[in-house]
Length: 439
Image (cartoon, rainbow, N blue to C red; front, side, top):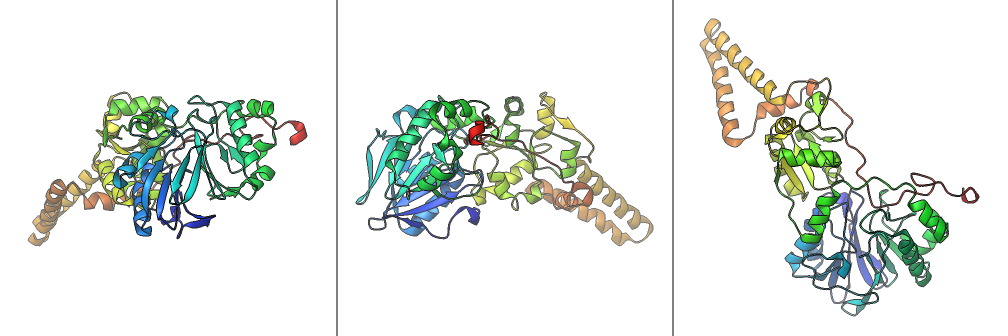
């Protein structure tokens, strides 16, 4: 895991302990705990963070009676199911969510108890019809309703801008200004705000209902990548497969899912041909760029020329707690054979071809030197042969890793595209501009 995502210690908010966990994708997971009973609640758990949350709860000596999803997430896979299984927790979501495995569906005003501490559930539709928020002593866990200096989008999953306006302003009327706001997303790394600060600084809260609806619907943000697959996962608990076919990959790319394709070939190979909009993160860089991978929407498709390096990347990333990784079976070669879209440019030959040429050249040099200079040089050819046998047995290649680091393969290339998110565009930004009297 990335230590940057986890605070060094829980925060004290009123009578509760609050542990905010910031995912590089902009998602926010929270653990609320009562320090006396040591009972805790996990909220909006990202699948990548299941191991992180489990370790934090166990290290603190807490139990976990509840795991809650505020709504059906469309931009990331929920880890509620796997985390609840590990602790035997009750899963909670609104009845309209229709999530498999959820056994408690709270109504507006229902309460959850962590020892003697009370957490109130409020139904807050708008972003989605099934949206709930949590209100505890001095804290408002807003999910995707009110965000820091923004609000949630309402253009999919039955969202309704009028309902969002009513939900937000209804809650604002009830909450003191010093109530801390913990949002479900923040794309600038901020942990929390307050109700008073939002009343003062959030441009969406200055709009009347009619203008709010007009502005939020004027120019919606990009649709979240892989939304259909994520909805199936989050509603039905469908597992993310470890292997996907080239045909399915081509379909996802055509549907706008290229932003979740991670190409682990060298930069030179990527420059020669790649899936348009995909990310170039060479195999020897995946650990150093793990947070960059976390920020890419799951299900993430790992691709290379065949699929060997992609499998190696998945193995390397697994101990870091990065989930939602699927290897594209047969790699670029199969994808291309199935008619998948590729962008071609100037680059270098594939790493596999470079290895074959390099190994053949070293065998040839060893044989020539052994014949014309000294028989000891035959050992070079034998060494290369032994290395190829070892590579075949272990499915690793030291020569390949060495060649991948050569200057001609270290090509920096722009990659990736807008993955979409859950925040509405700020008034005057991607949505309609503010009225002249408010600019």
